[in-house]
Length: 478
Ligand SMILES: *[C@@H]1O[C@H](CO)[C@@H](O)[C@H](O)[C@H]1NC(C)=O
Ligand SMILES: *[C@@H]1O[C@H](CO)[C@@H](O)[C@H](O)[C@H]1NC(C)=O
Image (cartoon, rainbow, N blue to C red; front, top):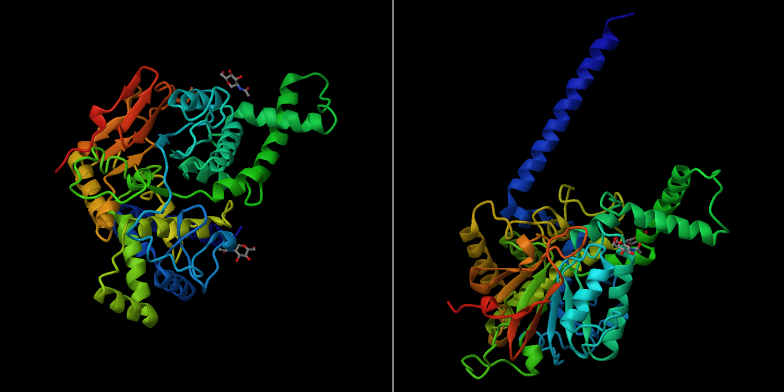
């Protein structure tokens, strides 16, 4: 045997090792540089056109009173019929004022993780539904912070519950917003590590029965289970694909949502109006895991590239800066994150989800990456300490509030994702950071049913089986 094949294979081995090391260095570099998330938002020329057009048109409001970025020149994957922008030019008006719709109350619920029974218990305890899980809250808004799925034995049941609730709420002037959690994202990527095995087997059995009885495996229970699991897994893949029933549902989730006190009041909140005790208590930014300045940078970065590249945009902004109209502000940041993700996820499947390491990685990749809105623990478990996290919260709030009118100031950030000790909601940074995940799924075994409510009369309240708590949750002045 000649000596050289051996030499070549050793050389190839070294080369492969070297390349993999180089790749992991690139990744490490990318993740340790969190404040550079903005620079991950590199744009191709098609993207430049899209975002310039978007920043030019600014903000639109659809028939559901959600803020979206849109433009007449590029079509979004969302149904264009739901976008009213362009025809009635409401976009610049809505920046500074109320959406014109009045809600009675806000509810917030954190991670549920496949526990249908506990979800209904919590919702009925809060007064959102009756005991069989039907909407009874009238024109209220319920925001669920993501992670409906995984771990528990009824992820599909919980997805169905929230889908039905959204329909029921809408019929009476209410609204249900279900945010994207990292576990929904994992399902679209085909990462089923946390899916409950019993649920898959149940799904497989149901399918086999519908196909005319269980497969005969000569009475061996283990084989029967294995066959049911295989059938269930195949179905699960289909259901979670971009055209599957649940896959299309979770791909349309927003990653962030804003609630405003003003929309409870039905009129602008007047600064220094002491009669409105709960002035800005109910104005909050909600995301699944965390939001740091890197994500604000990412939008600023897109915006600056777009204004450098597009003469039309630059001209419009110069005009606007004279009339003092332009400043990026909370709804625009949120709309940019949501729009980017909605574009990025529309075709997301096992391999094609936006990767933060891909060349020309988009804003979607920054939002969905390890330091982004659905994964980050930078605020909930800050490695640099609580002071750092509180400074970050203050900075993020002040930056997204900068361009907002006085009655559209966001006063806090509300997060799920990180389970808080002994089932207690954590209130940090003088009420400006609320960590709402009490781990109420029976498969996590943290706390009992719990949720938040916000009204003009009571401000933000924590609702648990032992009653309502509000003093601890107040936003401290200064
Ligand atoms: C899921 O588990 C709970 C608790 O063990 C049980 O009560 C419930 O019946 C199970 N659900 C289904 C659909 O099997
Ligand atoms: C998604 O896929 C469809 C068909 O494969 C394609 O027409 C469309 O442009 C894709 N959308 C995006 C945002 O890449």
